[in-house]
Image (cartoon, rainbow, N blue to C red):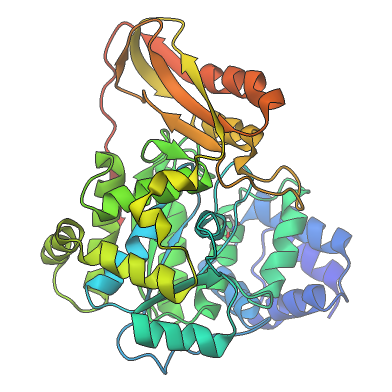
Length: 434
Ligand code: URA
C-alpha cells in the first residue's frame, strides 16, 4: 500500500477501505507516513469529505492507537459527557457531581483549554491542591468509592488524534466535520464509558458557526458512537454568548459552586439540567423529563454540592473554596469596564470574550504558557440586557496590568449595542436521541 495512492483517491472523492484508513492512522502515528503526506490527505478530506463508514473506520483506528480504558470494575452504566468547546463552559464541573449524586457513576477524562476556549482540567487545577493526574487504579478506585472522578486525559489516550490535531491546527484543516467527529469520538471511545452525551455548540464562540452544521456534526458523532456499541445522545446548544457570567478558571469554579448550591445564572443552570436529563436517561433512570426533575432536586437539595465536596476531597482539593469561593480569584486586581453607550446589548462576540480573558492570563497563548487561575472576566451585561452609559459592563481580573487596556478594547469590540431589545435565541436548538 502506498500513501500517495490513498491521497490521489481521496482527492477524487473515492471511498477508502478500512484497511487503507488503518494503514494511514498506524503509519502516521508510528512516524512512517510523513507530515506532508498526512497534511495533503487531511486537506483532501476537507474538500471531498468522507462516507459514514470511512469516518467510523478512521475513528476506530484512532481509538485503538493508544490506551483503551476498561471501566468494567465500576458497577452501573458509566456515562460520559463531551462539549465541543465554548467560552465560559463550566458544565462538566456541575454535571459530573450532579450525575453522580443521582446515582450515575462518572469516570471522566477531560482536556485542557484549546485556543479561546477553556478546558475542564485547567478549571479544576484552579482549586488549590486539586489533583488531575492519577494512575489508572486510583482513578477507578475513586469512582467506585466516591461515584465520580475527573482527571486529565492520559498521555497515551488516542495518540493518533494528538498528532493529527497538532497538524490540523497548522494546516487549516480543523473545521472539517469528518475530522472533528473522528477526533472527538476516538477519545470518547477509548475512554471507555457505556453512554455518551454530546454538547455540540454552534455560534460565534464555537467551531461550528451555524446550527445546521452543528446538527450534521452531532449526527455523525452519534452514528459513530452507536456503531461502537455506545448509547448516545446529543444536545445542540447556542454559543453566541458565553455561558453564565464568568470566564476564567477560578471564577468559573466559583460560578459552578453557585449552580451546585441551587443558584447561579439561569442559562448555565438550564444547559446543565438539559444535559443531566440526557445523562440520567441514557443510564436507565427513566424518561428525560423525569430525569430532569431528579437533577433539579439534586441541585436544590444540596446533594450535588455535597458530591462535589466529596470529589474535591478525594482528589486533594482544598475545602476552603466552599466557605470562601472568592479565594479562587481574590489574588487578582479587579478593573471595571464601563459602558461608553446606552441601549440594549444586541449581540456579543463570545470568541472576543474568550480572547480578552486569555490576554488577562486565563488561557494559553503558547503551549507552555502558565495560566493564572485568578484571571478572567465577569460579564455584568450580556445579550438582551439594558445598559446605561457609565454603568459597569464587565469586571476584569488580572495580575497583568500591562494587558488591561488591550483586553478592555477587545472585550468592548465584542459588544454590539442598539436601541431595540434583541429577539431571544433559544439556548437549546435540538436534542438528538434516536
Ligand atoms: N475538539 C476535539 O477534540 N477535536 C476537534 O477536532 C475539535 C474539537
